[in-house]
Each structure stands twice: as structure tokens, then as C-alpha cells.
Length: 121
Length: 106
Image (tube, rainbow over the protein chains, first blue to last red):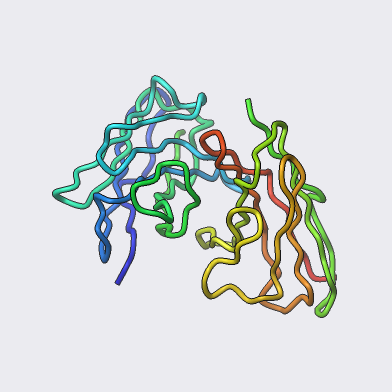
């Protein structure tokens, strides 16, 4: 089955660090760019970061630049987001999402995980 | 910075109604515009990409139009399953979502 499964969310104090992960299955993970998208409680969607299939292209939203690091391990079909210097404003459900087309970075997200909750308090 | 503005923020409608949601981009994005549907407690679902192309499996009552800076999502005849929140997203310059439109039952 084609799916994404996030893990690693939890409660962390302001200024702390947390690493969330996304396990992919059912498709050729290394062919697809992947993104993290977050949603604060009761709020809209906010794109966080993208990484190309090879890992060579990485981009961050201004709100997390310098604090978050996206990475992937194609041998383990895993996407990760290392979050440092966390703030209350980073409290959100973090979703991983796959690009619709292989070998493209700027594309829509056709596959989403169920999300993992990160609470900074 | 790219901004995406949806209107209205909330829309009350009845089953069978035709509804339209508008999304405006602060810069021209050609047709690099997608629409997503999100239900409470669930991940977003892709409905439309490239402004007007229906994702596989999405009912034909959904349609999208527009180019440049003005886009619309239309649901021709609302069904009970359609009451949800809808987001537009540009993917011309990285990614930006609109603030969302909550479609409520009247």
C-alpha cells in the first residue's frame, strides 16, 4: 500500500529540539521530492520545507530557516525534520507530503501522511 | 513574498447548491495553482492541479478555472460529503497556501 507514516511528535519546552520522521512505503521513495507542511491548532496549512529526491535541492520557509533541517535516507525510505530552537508558534500538526510527479520539485502534493503533533510549551 | 488570499473565509450553503470559492495570488503564477479539501482530523486531499485538472477519483462536480492571479473552485451541486475546508496552493515560487475557506451546511 502506498502510504506515509509520521512519528516523533510530542511535548517540548521552548528552546528545545525535536526530530520528526516520515516512513514511506509502496512507491519508489528516492524518485520523489518530499515536503513538510504544518497546521497550527484551528489554523490553516503552512508549507515548511522541501527536499528533492536526491537530497540535493532543499528549501525552507522563512519562518523556520536556520532552525529546522530537512533530510532523507533513501536507503531506509525515511524523511526527517530536525527542529531546533523551538517556539510556541511552532506548535502544530506536522504532515509529510509527496510530490505528485517523480523527478520534479515544484509540484502539488498527492500523498499525505496522517500527521504528528508537536507541542511547544 | 507570495500571498494567496481566499474568499470567502466561510461559506454557508445547502445540499444541491452551486458554490464558488475564489483565490487571488499576489503575483502572477500562470496556472500553477492547486485546490485541496480537508476534513476535521484528516490530512488534506488533492482535488485539482494546474488550475483546472481534476485529480484522479475526484467527482466531476468539482471544477477549477483561472490563470495569472485569479482562480476559482466551483462545486456544481453540493453533496453532504463536500462540507469541509478548502485551500488553494500556488507552486510557482516554492509553495504558499491560502488561508482556507470553510464550507458549512446552511
